[in-house]
Image 1 (cartoon, rainbow, N blue to C red):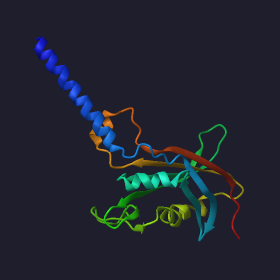
Image 2 (cartoon, helix red, strand yellow):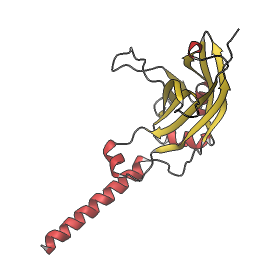
Image 3 (cartoon, rainbow, N blue to C red):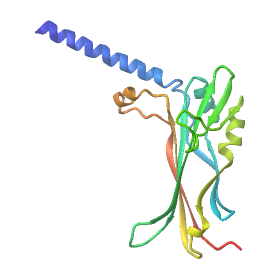
Image 4 (cartoon, one colour):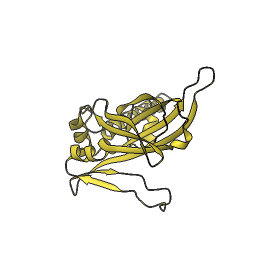
Length: 208
């Protein structure tokens, strides 16, 4: 019984060490820290009968992000925009909501940084979305995430003279984490940048 118990303890220790080693390998360049999200733009526009949200999304340290991508990290930037009408006694009314996501990686063959959009809903299951490439990460991010224009709701869903609020949430996470590893290391966050939330109040006035 003692020999069996000793073998069991050694086996458990070996599994634990293997999991920890794989965990270290799964997150390259732990020293790199892009910091937090930075919004260079966050305002409303009305075009063609639609309410659009103009965004400029960046991080505090783009160089750290570049290092992580060159070391093999793959990431997803995900966001959600909600238009709500605040109410005092009842829960806020959700007028519209919109999700968006972008995938970031570095191609070691072409040495390009890539930003990929998800395929459109009508695309086949094995289809892919548009891809933007640039050998300079800062130029790629500035021309894409730095100039986002997201259609959210038709203006016909808004009432003139009514107060509304735009709620924006953002996350940037690793996408190349094996599912079994993410379940094993339950106290390890896969966020590249801490999730962030922003809001902006506005009163809708009918456009002339």
